[in-house]
Image 1 (spheres, chains in turn brown, green):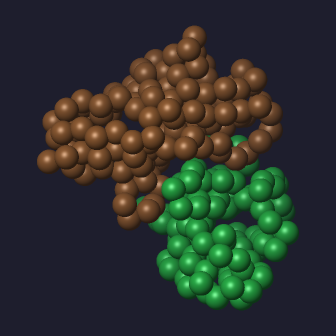
Image 2 (tube, each protein chain N blue to C red):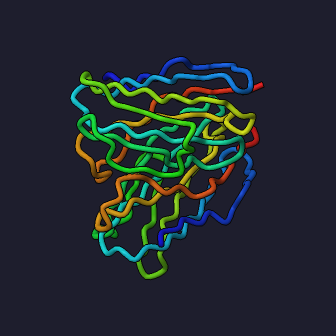
Length: 116
Length: 114
């Protein structure tokens, strides 16, 4: 069965600090996809990144970076030099391609508050 | 670029009433997904449609029904509303059934049942 765990319920950092959001997943599929979404206070879900199970390269996009490690089933998200606009709930999600499911399984989210 | 359009943005209904939520996918997207996000919860998959046929079903109550129309827009019909149905309802669309490409979500419909 698939499962996504975001152990950090809430994190507060001071502006310009770096912060890492943890995501650990479980799946029996060998082919799967991992995602991060941002949900700002306005409520919409904003797609940040998709990573497939065969691509373990880390990715950097501006102040955002992602560390995918299959050995530990983790897909962690780091924000460098955090800003107040980064305050949001961040969801990690999993999709299993091999099993035929076409829906996303979300973690419970991490609420990030960046204090000015 | 065009995004997924959901209407209405906000909806207030009384218990036992009926609500209809609409979703207009990105042009040329043929797959629509519905998710429900309760207060402080993560989004939960309800149902999806591919080429106007139901393709997958999650934790959708029997009081809810949905369909996808010939123009690929979708409607989620919710009857006998309960207080617990108060939630943010998201629609997402994709081209093809698999989530390989990732979803694009709409801005959601916030349903409040009083």
